[in-house]
Image (cartoon, rainbow, N blue to C red; front, side, top):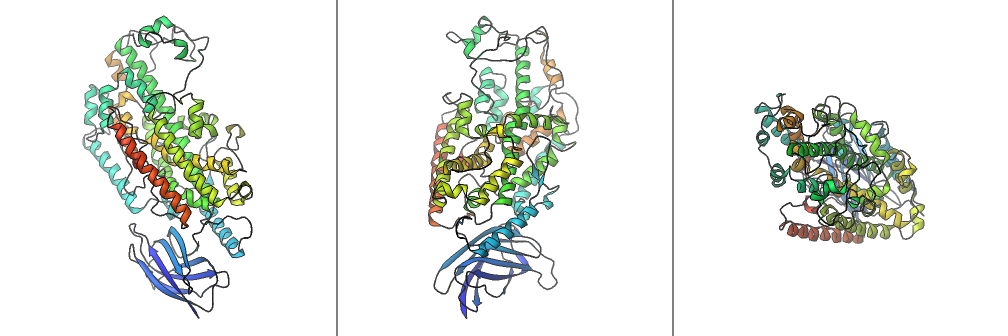
Length: 618
């Protein structure tokens, strides 16, 4: 008889313990142990130790099999298994990171923590385990068509349709729902949720919510300033909309003389502007030198258009929907022991549930977008389809995206400055991890699980559009490094850049109206302050939009800032070293950004690593 020491760790999350009966089998290269009962794991955060006896030497332990079964007549309860550690009779230590919820009566096989590629000579038992794991996850993570011409999504109608490990933790759900309820109750108690009147005084907007941020206060005071109008296209919530213009179209009716006072001496219009609109009596050209309210309303219309493009394209499509595709494909094609699964999984946390909530509570029939946004009631699918036509691989890779937009050297463009530092640090981490596991390019091209993952993303995320430039396969380590960096950046920093500032800039409705109730002006000299009040959304629309903007901008509890790997699936020394180096670089960058912001009136905090969530979870 051979004795093995076993440690079983229960997670620290709310309701992690279980009153069900847990048993274990150790599976080795020589044989497997008999099933041994471990009893209930009902204490949150506990690490329980057991002796498991086998009839002989198990050899190298490949995986452990956990059984969750009914205890007497008690109803089943969920269990969060953090890890299992095993020490052999010769002192060899094996780690089995799990970090998964077990629901119902079930069996789970957890492979040893060392990253293993499905190339070369792989133990048949591991092949069988990986195959069974992926078959199960392909059943639990099915694809569904979301909208014609848009990326596919998870086949689920409610959170209960999602695997438990893809759902919010109890702490996060409680925090999210209580914050949403509190802000909703505030505006309801003030009688704003059912008020369909127009605003009569813009100062009354300050009374909608007690909550404020330093930037939202500045927006309230600066929204009419031309410099602030321009600033938002650099460092606002949609910093990817601005492009360098290199050619003026022939039908552009603005002359140098018309805007000379605004542009200043020494500035050539040819180098500053481009517009595709056909001139005519119904399309007046509004200038900064026009009457105050004419010019203000023109800027309001531009901001309104930018809000729609931002929410449907830059925010929804380019981050949320793509991250959902990455998450589903990762679950379906990469097993737990695959090193790229271990690298990616922290950046896919809670994405499926937040997107499900968005589809039902924000984008569904009769939901907020239908009530408050000009692109509601059928407009979002149209915008998504158009945005998909312009979605390219280069637009998702920050260095190339900046180059294509001609924004490599624009001063005080903090999205670029901070974003490039994060991209470079991520790229170093990914390069180190990839080169550690893939010793040459041949291993990349011959990894069937990796290739299936890339192909499925190409099919379900980019709809097999070769014009997008998205690869359907990878052959070089350099290609894999770029691809993985893009995925991680999209799921963390890019989302933060296009999400976290929503309340700062959108809570003051005149600065970024979700809809407008009057058509665009066709003549100059007729706009008054009352015209603007009549055009802006009514009271209840404004109040509801502000509530949502607050909740979407504020990450609930159970946060994991960029660089946090508290539940790392890696166990090997070198990958853990690479992660520590990345964490150190994020700490240093955060300090640099905070020091820079001390000297700025308009601070840019959205790409401070300490404020970036590692995944799209809000």
